[in-house]
Length: 293
Image: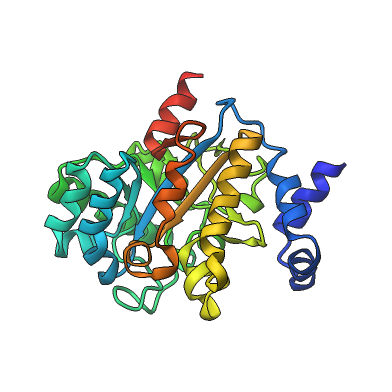
């Protein structure tokens, strides 16, 4: 009964329900929801990734790769075919540093720089296939690597079940395109009926219906977590909770925000403090382990 209530609240699109949770019980709900996970790993897991959505993100790749290497941290990079084709050398740095390439569509619909007039979930199935398949081909041709994971542009509300048959056809193993708060698994990885693993994206402890990313934290409406090191403290709070409860979390950031924004400075120092208690894995590695359990 209690589980169903948490699921109902998490999936609710009612403004008043979301507002009440955010105003009065955000961290209470966040903790109660996520700690109901059944984590097959029996240890805290972090899937760390970055979305290369804009030209500014592409420019940030070299510095971000360098900073990650200093801490020996491997991550996933959700790459758009348009940018891979235009800036192959920058994207090759990701592969050369042994990070994972994630298919993030070819034009990233609803992107002011690449495709401002379309929304991914409104595309015809033929158009969705084209977006995924063209990005897949570009990644293989220009980066000489085969992606096994996909992330829907803007994911969450813009994700659609239309992607899963396409991913299955291409031999993909997972998607990371849903909000954890809307999952029946309380944010843990689960298998879609098409046989594709879905790795839900973790939300914010202070705004449980919103993803915890740099757009939400540092830019949306001026940034919800810019004051008094709020971004770093929230990041630390999520990591600490994951370690304490031994749950799966999935956090993604925008590269330009992680190398240029003063409010994110020091985030890798915080993450490094948890390396002994937290397994930091790419989506491909997570799925590999899940399939072996």
